[in-house]
Image 1 (spheres, rainbow, N blue to C red):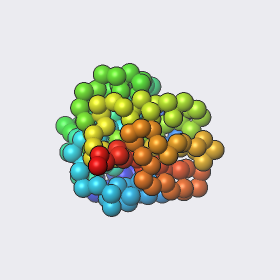
Image 2 (image 1 turned 180 degrees about the vertical axis):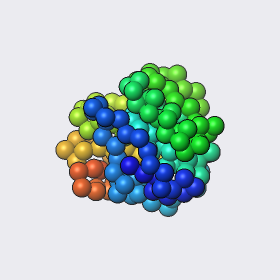
Image 3 (image 1 turned 45 degrees about the vertical axis):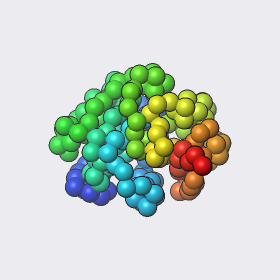
Image 4 (image 1 turned 90 degrees about the vertical axis):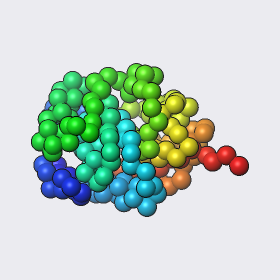
Length: 184
């Protein structure tokens, strides 16, 4: 797996072996960032939930994000994220939280401009986590929330106050883009 664009384009990333981690393909990552580049110009604070190898967050840093917080519960994956950050020389712009996503949502205390969520496709409780995230202090009025999921597991079009603004399918991956409803 490699970084596909930006200042560390071409760097090979280490991927966890013998885990349930399913890294987003180059096609899916490219589609996510193509959508983000046309949807928002605010790349100050990025949150990468279910970070796995850290590929999505590292891609965001490579493309100009100021800071990325990575959340991953598997200690082996957390070590790989740290190694990938060191290899790309992006460690100074990131922090790795080795804990569950639900726990991170409960203690993280800042608003993110972009939240990337790439959960295991077998996780049927993703809708519940999106709902928890939607009402958290992590999502602001200009936040964009990106959730990748299996086409066999549909997500709701609204997790109040988040509304689905775009959805794309690429092979066996769906990309759902949410934004907070604007107040009249």
